Image (cartoon, rainbow, N blue to C red; front, side):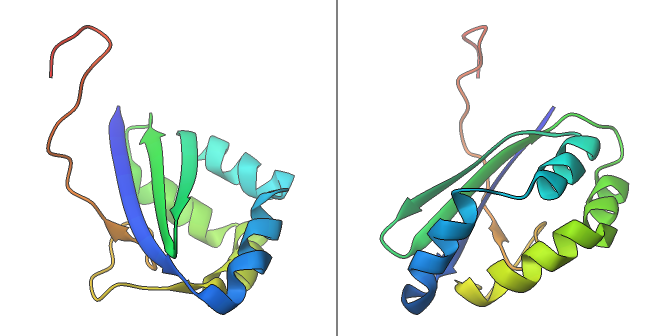
Length: 112
């Protein structure tokens, strides 16, 4: 399993819109994520910073990410959510979002 953590800034003037959209994520967007082997996707908010985390259970990460990017529902979703976000100088897996480096993990078995 691959764990991915990312961050992006939330534009304050779009805060309410972003929160409204995420109160009812479209079923097609969720289906595309599941079909691409994404699990436990969570987005957290602190002030104007979004933090996202997901687990990838597949064996071809790049192909699965390309499948998500090609999905029509996801493309329509991004047209609504992308203007709400402001990228950091460096971006990563998610395009708009910047990847974070994992420095420690407490596993279920108790080993790092």
